[in-house]
Image (cartoon, rainbow, N blue to C red; front, top):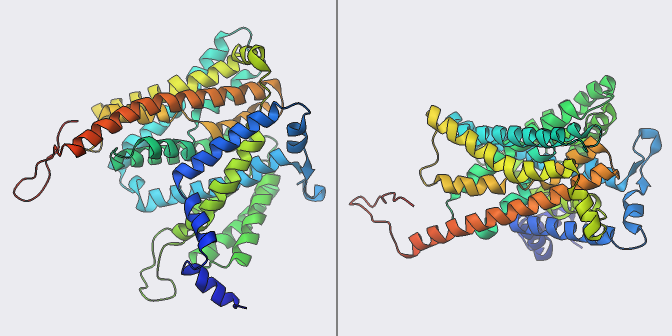
Length: 435
């Protein structure tokens, strides 16, 4: 029987092939997007089966009532499992700000501006649609933030599938845009979708958060130290009235990114953020996000009549218009104006038509859009169901349109590579050709 140290050593060396192989597969962007798509399809099928078992399952309550955690499974998925997803987002944000593209203001200016424009314009379009319609339900404007989000898993997954020959700078642009988008979305959730704020639990949450920060800054990796502190932070943030996913982002942001310089010492090796992301991403992509989709994306369509009724709701129309029209218009307009008025420039390997493809792709709002929809209209209400349908249809349309455009660009870049349209000068440095 191997000792714990032996087991850890065997796992580190990859001699537990099944576990390491599954984890490696779950880290692939295409796999995470595929699992999300499958979970969404299952939710839609299950919700439309007779018997109502879908609603019964997601309304099943679990947890200690004395701690205020007697929550439905749907609530646990939105507040609990998505905290893991946002913890990964916090790690990505920290890495981008410390060691990635956001470290250089000139390189980060365009995708940051794109993220801001890509949130402002969809919100304005949504408000315009619901305000112009006399049939809009009361309080419809509270859903203004629903079409402002970009789903990282879906968007990067689609780009990975259709963009095998696209410049790597395009993925960097999309990743930076989506990461900043997540940061802004979390800010929106904390500021605009928090009711009945309880300051005492919020202040108490700073204690385990500070201890967690101290531990990770000292490169502590011991799970029985960090996990209780993280859970206590999450529980207190949840009790404060702020959406508990904010705790996930805060925990991710305090993890150090930069590798230790103590070569050969106990702290040598990858930064802790890289280590945690490597460990937790499979759980996020393979379980947390798909289960959230399974418990959130199910909506009773009711056939053609039900679909027509949903699409006659200004809320659903505003969501679709915001995702399909508002996202690309906001991203492209903001980026183009900033590039013309300042010294900010696109990466030399990119063309504006490439950015247009990514701008359309950013209209895949799925995960965070569904979360904001549930916060704006509650769970199980007609407006919430119409929001879910609008998010699904808008995200699907954005994915299809972006897929067509990016596939065309991918063929262009593949032809350039195949025909070897790059000549080398005497120093072996390739000339840049117009594409």
